Image 1 (cartoon, one colour):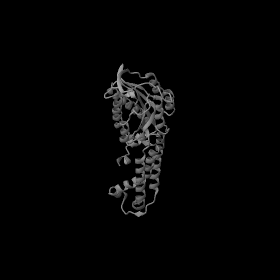
Image 2 (cartoon, helix red, strand yellow):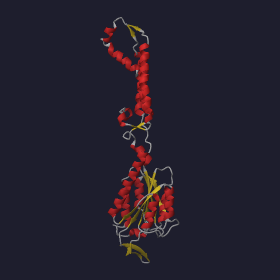
Image 3 (cartoon, one colour):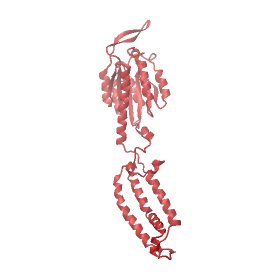
Image 4 (tube, one colour):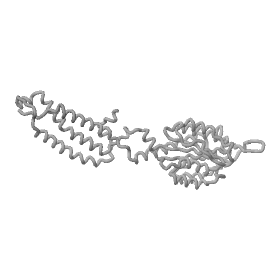
Length: 345
C-alpha cells in the first residue's frame, strides 16, 4: 500500500525527464491563482479591524484558504511528474520481471548405452540426472523441458513449470529401448523445435553427451544453425573422465563392461556453442558437472540482468496520480462547502 502513495521523488528515476521543464509553469499558475483570489469580492461581513483579524485565530483560516487556492498548482505539479514516467525497481513487481525476462530451458540429454559407463558413480547417466534435478529444483518461474536421445530422439517433457512432472520424467529417462547410437544433431534439433516460439525472451538448451555424432537425419552443425536462427543459446557439456572408462557393451550373452577410450567430439560441441552464443564445458567427474550447471546459471542470470537494465522498465506513476486525485477531491469539497470568502473590513 505504501508504494502506491510514496511521493519521495529521490526514490524514482524517470524515463521522460524533459517533462520537468514544464514545472517552470507552476509558479506562474500559482501566482495567477493567488492574484485572482485576492481580487475576488467578499460575501460575508466582518465588523472588526484588519489588525484585530491579523491577530486572531482567523490567521490559520487565512493560511488554510491560501493553501486551498493553490491546490490546483500542486495537482499540476504531480501530473507533470507523472508525465515524466517515474519508475522504481524497488517498487516493481518482481514476478512481472521474471516472467518478462525469464529463461525457457530445454535439457537435451544423451541416454545412449555409453552413458552407463561407471567412471561417474553410479554411472554417467544417473550422475547427470542427479545434477540436473538439483538444477531444476534451484529454478524459480522458468519453464524447463527434457529431450532424451540415443540413436533417435524424443521429447519426454515439453517446457513446463510443473517441476515434479519434469523430474519424474527425468528420473525415468532410459535409452535401453531406443535405437543405438548417438544422434547429437537430432537431439539438439528436437530441443530447438520445443523452443520455436519467437516471443520468448530468453531460450536456452543445455546439451549433454559423452560421445560423438554417429547417427540421425540432421547434423549437429545444421541443428546449431537452426538454433541460432531461433535466437537459442546452446550450452554443450561433454561428460566423461579422461583416458578410458568401464563401458557397457551389448553382446550375444548380454551386457559386459570393458575399458573403452573416452571419445568426446569436443570440436563439434565447441562449434555448436560458438555458433549459438553459448559455451562448451567438459565434466570429468560429478562435482565438475555440478559446477558447470552452477556456472551456466550464473551466466544466464547476468544476461537477464543486462536485459532488464537495457529494457524500458514499467513506469510507476501511480503514487503521483493517486495524490493528484485526492487533492482534486479536497479542492472540490472545500471550495464548494467550506471555502472562506474574502473578508472586507
